Amino acid sequence: FSFGEFSGNFFFNRNGEIITNVSVPLKINYNILTDTEGKKYLTFLIIDGKGNQYFFGESEASRETDELIAKNQGNTIPFRSGEGNTGWKLTKVITYKSDTITFNYNNYTFQHTYIASDQFSQYRIASCLFTPEPDSPPVSHPNFQRIINEHVYKCSLISSIESPIARISFTYSTISNLYGWKRPLESIVIRDYAGMLIKKFDFSISKTTAGQLFLNQIVEYGGDNYSVISDGYRFKYNLSAFDMVGSMGRDYFGFSNGSNDNYTLLACPDSKLFGGNRRIDEESVGHGTLSWIKYPTGGSTSFEYESNKEGSTYAGGVRIFRIIDYKNNNFIDPDEVLVEPQNKREYYYEELTGSNLITQTSSSSQGYIKYFNMGLYTGTEYVIYSDNPDAKYMEAMDYYYKKVSEIRYDGDTPIQRIISSYTSTFNGGFYNPLLEDEWHDGNISSSTSPCNWFTARKIHQAFSNNNVISYPYYILNDSYFRETVAPFGTYYPGLEPKSIRISTPRLVHRKELEYFQ
Image (cartoon, rainbow, N blue to C red; front, side, top):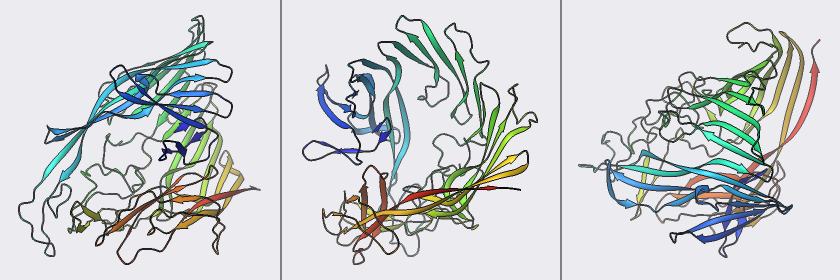
């Protein structure tokens, strides 16, 4: 759920009660209703600390659904899932003063077809050409079959919001070649209870050749339908060599790396053929970032970014490097005309610290998923694991810089440096993964840093007598700390850890000012 300033996850306990994974001043209830066709569906009610009531999913248009159809070589096979809800939208608010605000939606449907998996014989995986290795078991005539999934989504778009004093209407446009599903917002109109126009906002959207949408301009109109501001906000972006929608060109962290020739991110077991390229590319990682804003009140601001790294160690994505403000009443684009900067700030980062960081060398082979080894057959499925450290799955980006400096300029002369330094304590705990349903709650300390209360709960465990064992872990924190998901761990029989320690940094911030002579 994401609601106001609160967000997190909730689950149903064995008594059917809703339990949140974080402590929030909200009460979450649910109800099971039946529609005119006899189908049962869920609705939710959230009550905040002031007594305001928020209803979700009451109307059919506010409930988003997904239907999965599996296909084989493009032909439907005897499998079709039932339709399931994937989201519930806010439909009504009853305030503590008994005022009612309603939210109306329109549905639209689109289909998305993609290659879901490749069926393979005992020692074959993914779509690589079959190449037996000398140390592999003998294989003859591998059975290869492609499975294609088709998702049919029914989505919701807000169409209007109605209250006792106003009505807000939303309209959308349809741009061709958007893969059948994107609906750009075209305008927002606000009227009073009598239907008189109060304000209107128009949105100008552009489409890249790869199919992405970007907001170019916002124009605001007053009640007389006359443009209040000449041409409102305008935006520019770094759109060079943008990846196509669905591109496999992704680095470890999920950002673009420009490797659009990646067909799959899987590789062959017991074969040292290269698979998906997950190398980090500093030029591609910033595609789509905002580069310039023009303000309706005059002036503009440009933004420059750099790769989020220290040396050859990467944290994924980009960070801000330079921000320049321009004072220009004619709204001239600084990329097109030489404009004197009004204010310039540069940012410098030191001592990158945290988990899930990648150190990338100049080796041309590093960054590829090279090969997988196959675990033993359990009678129902294979357990497949990678013994290649380059084939990492990044669960979260838990990092920070111990020191960040902002340098402010007067023209090209630095006049001030603001140093933000950070130290951290750690919230942590442990539990034994080998004891079914055992919990360890407590204030656990180590020799290096204090640990605060939290609850760690093991939600799943996969046991096997002669196989690789994988343990997913989940941490349930109180509201002071953010939710953390620990990555999957892979352990071997006879080498299981006695306990797992999981920590999350909590930062303490300090600022210093330094003036240049």
